[in-house]
Length: 230
Image (cartoon, rainbow, N blue to C red; front, side, top):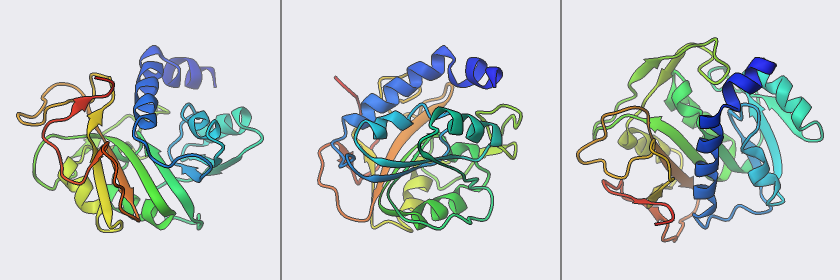
């Protein structure tokens, strides 16, 4: 447990990254208060209080046993589940919001994962993930260290393109969006033409059962975005 906390999820870069993602999420104007939320791939639950502080009913989950054990200690009064999207889904419930930040790219079959997320979601799917540049529909498999508690359980991840993600979200949701802005963090590029070439690159998506008329969202896949707060 000390390794899990000190060497992985509570490292400085993780704390900074979490802060930037959550302040960006709060800026989108989405209806997030007093909702029933399923958090997938929660790690040790550093995003969970975002929803608790908005009076949400939260079910927090992860696929790794050591992470679930930590979640059960940290949030002992809450519902905690083991959900591994690489395995057949035995969890059969519906949540207004499915929150999936930082998980999709740690999975070997992202198409199956999106299908499972959609089956659990009655309103909004909030998705943030590492992506690959490009206009093609591609998954781009990538190896990961399965011994790292923040990485893929199977040792196989992916870096799908943004068009691939939008295409697959629209198989299950009538409305799918990218955000007009990106979090204030170097892993979130603002210009996709020409594409970024260095390090991890990330993007934020919102899928919905109903249309969202918000100035913070775009149904068109943007080639240029703004920095949140500018």
